[in-house]
Length: 358
Image (cartoon, rainbow, N blue to C red; front, side):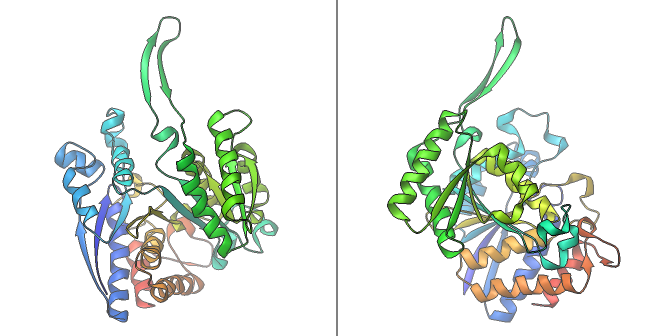
């Protein structure tokens, strides 16, 4: 199989962790007889520095010409004072929109070898935790109208708009129901229907769609504030969690921390086709950039999801996941998941160990 992969390394630790994922993908290609080519492209702060904008037209063009896209991380204090439409994060939102990606799947899995890394009491996680957060990606408050104005009484005032359509809700509900059908047959849909009109439409539409198309899937509702509490109180109750853009952004990070480290969590963003955007859910961590201490596992797992979800290479996906499990079972840890009695390694060494076990 020949596949062309666009690589948006981005900022901070982005280049280090994407290098790790590429090294593992090359090992997979060598073992299974594939040919992967990688094209580095600019996005985020590095693109602002080079081109004056977070998402150059060339990057969009080349990503659309690729078979899939691997992303590191974007942003950092260097660009925090720029106007909102010029900041690195605008590039991330833009590339998702340009590729037509409306669903973000974030598996928050507690690996057996890392059970002690969870900040929760052992009895809450001893039976395992795997929360699949299905986040709507191109609607909601992140893409709604916004602005600022001067209020005579209150001074400078800013506003953002949360807006969802039935079409947007139905297509993300389909993703969640399809996943649930392959798993427990249950979806917990998260909203704030006691306050927000957009959440009331969300709740109504999700239930109508599931009842019409997935009668074998049970949908229950949970308010977002209660969901945040339940994730730390009883995380094992969750399986597939369906959320809006903003709620999913926040709750997936909370779920990630319950599993031990945000550095272990991958994600995939998909639309109607097979081309996807694969990225770790953590940030650019500029404070540790260039020090060879970042955890590459989330990005390596994101690359594995690319093999499975965009290229239908399930055996190759399993090979990467098994290699990671072996390395963790052997006691190797990066700084973020380090515990007593384990062997501490850096980003490059963790990558080498995983690739060696493919």
